[in-house]
Length: 158
Image (cartoon, rainbow, N blue to C red):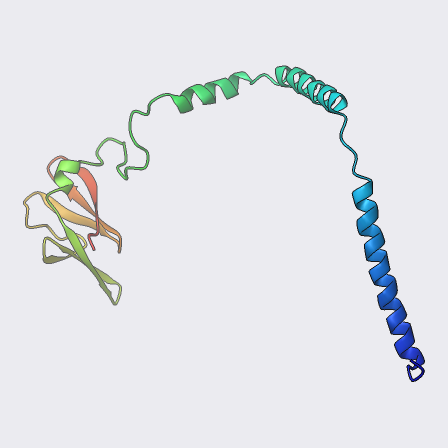
């Protein structure tokens, strides 16, 4: 031990101090564990429940909130996510079943849709009499029935 330099002595001292401090902390934390007073905890819990119950009765819903809740719980007359617009003149699912939109091409600003394995540009009459292509998009085509002026959308089938 005579050859140990001052720097090494300092390092060994710090390590010894750290180990001793860790042991002290570990032993002292185990000794200070106290059992909670169950009666006091029960009283605190009951007091909390009583305060919250009083607070909840103060927050009654407004007439608007009650209306929104009633409307949300009631049945819907139509599904807003079905893709069919509920306006007059738009949407005839039986007509949409006549057509199969399977392809889309756009070259130099001109769009062409493949409907029932035939290519149609915008405005072209379809092979089923009384229908024409009103609009073409990559996801769907809008077809109009000329006789009764109804429109319906046919999504692409991939």
